[in-house]
Length: 106
Image (tube, rainbow, N blue to C red; front, side):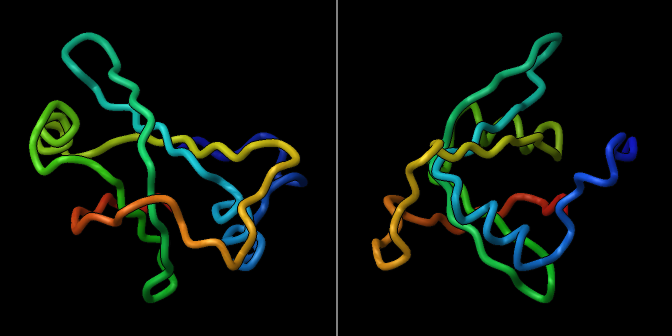
């Protein structure tokens, strides 16, 4: 992976990385599909296990997303928060975690 150009802006402290992820409500998966890229928004869950970030994505156990992950063995993703709006910590997440795991990139 290419190193970040502006290392002075890197967020590396575990508690800050967790806070950034927790502030996000939507994940967009990017999957290679033939000669193009298939990008799809998904709800997600997140936890830290053994010092690694583990993401759980909501979705069916079959279909285009699952087919592409199985075929390619990887997926890129992007997380979005909403400016000025954060889900209160006491509010339960609006997703149902699935048992499928995606590889961690942190």
